[in-house]
Length: 80
Image 1: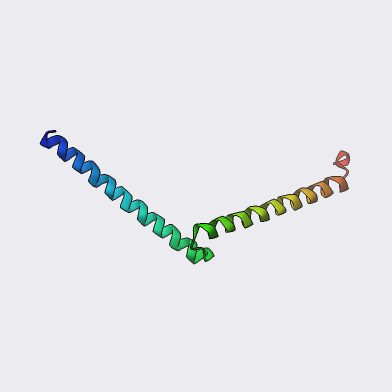
Image 2 (image 1 turned 180 degrees about the vertical axis):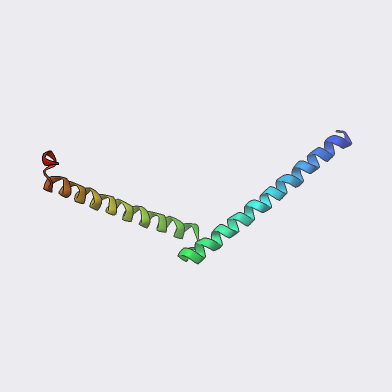
């Protein structure tokens, strides 16, 4: 291995370490924002919150479908 190749490898390692530090910083900011906005601190709490929100969305979609069906059945669309 030449000195030049060694320097290239060394620079790549330094760049990847810098990228890892940036990623960790971004993750820390996301975790802080989750705690601030939703009082969520763990992966389990994130999963629970997502499941609860998905269930609520399903309920709202079902209700929307019911209301659309009710509206469609109450309007004489041929007269419009």
